[in-house]
Length: 100
Image (cartoon, rainbow, N blue to C red; front, side, top):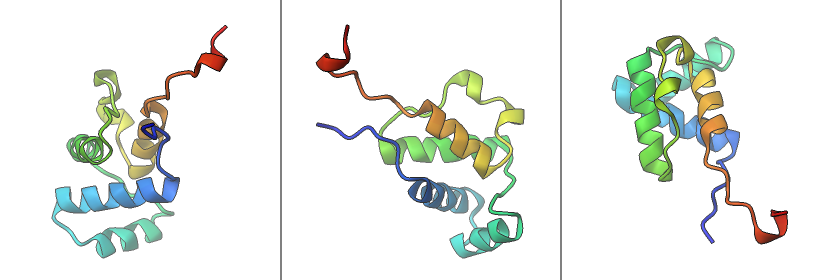
């Protein structure tokens, strides 16, 4: 069966950093340094966030955001984006045992 569990936080953070590095045309190491000096987070512009979400959707093969999620004030940093992606991760279908 297809594993639909969200990736571990560290894996997701790494994927997001790599996607952001591609969007910003910057080295991943530079972004890691920026995150380290900002308490582990990086501020981003909403168009960058949308591009990162699209890259994650391609990587993981799941839709990870709804139109209403794409408000600029909600997509201000990698941590807010991580929270959104984790919240919107598709839930596995309930097993027959779980049905009433």
